[in-house]
Structure formats: structure tokens, C-alpha cells
Image (cartoon, rainbow, N blue to C red; front, side):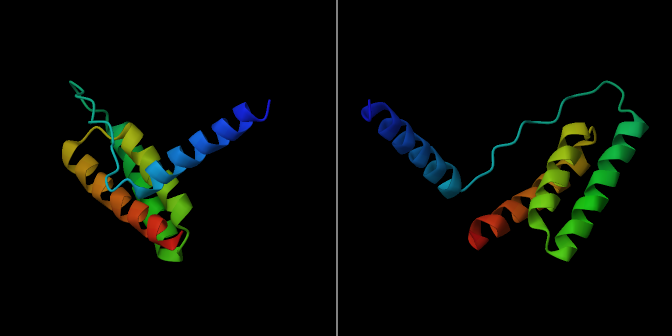
Length: 98
């Protein structure tokens, strides 16, 4: 009976180590919308503005969350790449702080 929980704990620890040591954040590619809506781009920009404010305050977990939300609604390829680069920077900051 103790074998199963120990194995589960070891598997979870291995997964955590893999995720923490992973050098690259894999993100989905932006969806190719036929016509991008200005309201979703405005929402994406609002999330980016919020993320940058959190980053300036040193609240990196909240900044990461806002960047991910911005990526999820972004339809402009150039903005998407910028958000992805900033998110990778936050990910590296968080990884080095742990």
C-alpha cells in the first residue's frame, strides 16, 4: 500500500523538476483569424498594460497571469510575438527567484 503513494510522489517530483529546468516555454501559435476584432485587440492591450504595471511593482506571478491572458485573446501576430517575449522574460525571472 505504501508503494503507490511513494511512486506518485516520485513521479510528481520528477515532473516538477522537468518543468522547472525546462529552458524554453512552449506556447501555442496564434490563431489565424480572418478578420481580427478591435475589441479583442483592445482587451489584449489592456492585459499587457496590466502585466507591465505588475512587473514594475515586482508582482511577477500576477504579471505572468496577465501576459497569458493577453496571449489568449491576441489576434495580431506582431503583438503576439512581443507578448510572448515579455512572458518568457517573466518566466526566467520567476525561475531564477525560486
